[in-house]
Amino acid sequence: MALNEQKGKDDIPKSQYQKGVKHLCEKGHLNAVPKKYILPVSERPTKSSVEHSNVVKQNLQLPIIDFSELLGSNRPQVLRSLANACQHYGFFQLVNHCISEDVVRRMIDVNGRFFDLPLEERAKYMTTDMRALIRCGTSFSQTKDTVLCWRDFLKLLCHPLPDLLLHWPASPVDIRKVVATNAEETKHLFLAVMEAILESLGIVEANQEEDDNILKEFENESQMMVASFYPPCPQPDLTLGMPPHSDYGFLTLLLQDEVEGLQIQHQDKWVTVQPIPNAFVVNVGDHLESVLHTIVVNEIKSRVSVASLHSVSKT
Image (tube, rainbow, N blue to C red; front, top):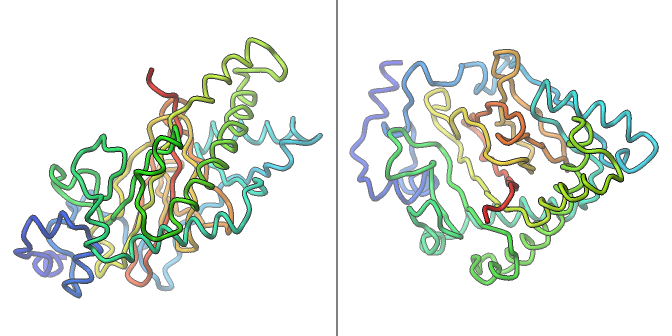
């Protein structure tokens, strides 16, 4: 490991780091992880979790919730499964959710194409202001983080949508239309899933006027989209796409491509979540009962994910 650490030492200027890890990969044809991205030994991912080899990884099949069955006679049974998923996993995969496969595919595709834009175009939205309405950046805070994440991101506030849409990036040409469609449909899905979760946990009951008032608070919720791009990494056992963390708010609805990377802490172990095509990975946030999760990277494939984060607006 000492040899790898030595290879990772470099004199890359701070200004280059702030342009993102994708820029560094394109510019330098990196064959080693730069020093700024190397984690302390105790914080690095386990070797087996990042290797593409014959090593057997600890993969986890999350509970699968069929959204269509929440709308029918099987609702009580599905609610029990939902309560179990929230209480024992903090995550579940949502299938048959009424958002079309085409919308999901376009959402992953357009965000991937955004990160393929020339740096000059992406740089229009780069800022260190954590509260910016639109922010393209790298890591969490590239000016403050001691060790950077192997990740670039695009953050867009999505509510109220009409007030924000014209501030969004204009390239790729279809990004506003695709993201707006996804934001509207995801908001409706969030409200339906949130109602089901609260009902499954006994916090609200169906068709109760007082409980309807509780649910109305979510209609003016805060919604934010965060698209993440994780380039291939020459030494994935030295760094992370994102360190262990939990999500603020109520729910995160995550779309991801076919590349593994998401790991959750389950029964005191880090386990890899297997992607299911066209499914949302739903993550219970800090307002309910959040679970630590992290992102590992790999040496072969880039990875794109799009998270829709939902919480109650601060008014």
